[in-house]
Length: 111
Image (cartoon, rainbow, N blue to C red):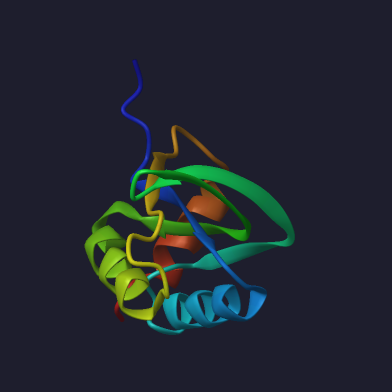
């Protein structure tokens, strides 16, 4: 089985478009993410929180980054997010176009 790449997709939900834009801009500005897609149509989330079933409208952020930036990205999300326990789910990228993966790696480099 192929090892895959060090590219990662991180899923984060937030309660408003304004918050999503703030998180996205901070992540890209600090080179923690190459790109953040903000799904601007709200999703209805049904979840268990502190023993109760809740529901809310949330906005999904699809964050493109590299494995080496995950710890710093997670800290930045925790710092800028309004939720007590923000979603931070990391998905591995098995493959992708070489040019895109090279751009992604360069976009989050610290140079």
